[in-house]
Image (cartoon, rainbow, N blue to C red; front, top):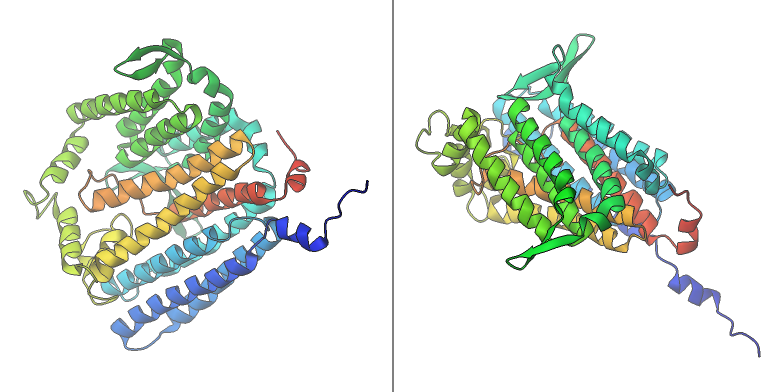
Length: 457
């Protein structure tokens, strides 16, 4: 009896599609929308298109094309949606930074600087895809990643290179010739620590999932297994105490608790994490004046509107002025909000694009998170699953913390909005994050025979 033959057409039908053409079409759409936003700003403020538009159009196109070609060559089975969504967010962010430049200073330097940061970010994006051909290799460096991550968090505290800006000591300053620039190492530390969390929890998750007792319907872990979460809690408090960085502290601890829950599927870790968070927040409020100030501004920003509550009050006025559909790009006054291009860029979008525009931006972030979680589900190895889930969770937590602070849902924390805000360290770190997600996605969607040929830790 002869075995049934399978036609080449049937084999091709079962083979996963690369969908790089779909990605290119979506990238083109994102590029056109970004150009339209930039042109709108130029026409409203200048009544003509200037050389800044030409610079943006050329550099942005070359950057997106380079990223697309890199995916075609280095990760052909990667998710086709992630890069276009990130490109659209980045393009709109560059357009708004240019708009804020023109409002505050027609010869402002934020937009040209951010455009060059975009070039460097795409370069790092390509480098990650080029040098990390198999994400499983990262598991070998679990504890190295921990040391590097903690070192990056400590770096701003060192004399000579650490710098305090706007009350937080989270920056390092460096000079290149006659030019000086600042960098926020915590953004890179975020990525490195996610690698550590994923590698550690893959090995320890069975032990951490063990329950010793049951209280109020919640399975509590053994006392000896509480060490990791207590260390993460203490480290996050140390960041808050010594660097006065509420945002990084909250992101760091929340990320670890979320990954711990994903790894063990134990609700008790969320319960313990919530108790530790409330305890730490109460202690920080009692001990530190800057935490008390943040909370008092959050409760009533209009009590001292002219001084301490000025920033959040202006942000709320901007959202109110924007209404449902906004006043139009280039036609509002988002420059009334201090640091509008960094911490409060979402308020600028809220005024000029309205609630509809803000919701559209949040949907774009939701797509990034959803595609990342889809990648985590599809990934075949446990380390890749946790790494993809951690990277996606980091984006979600950061967006929630930033938008929650700007809209007065939670106290202000000082984090930047991924891909939108001005800031080189944030942009570079988040493009690297997307590169790692795409690398894992390529392994998850690639045919099984091709995956098994890759290296493993």
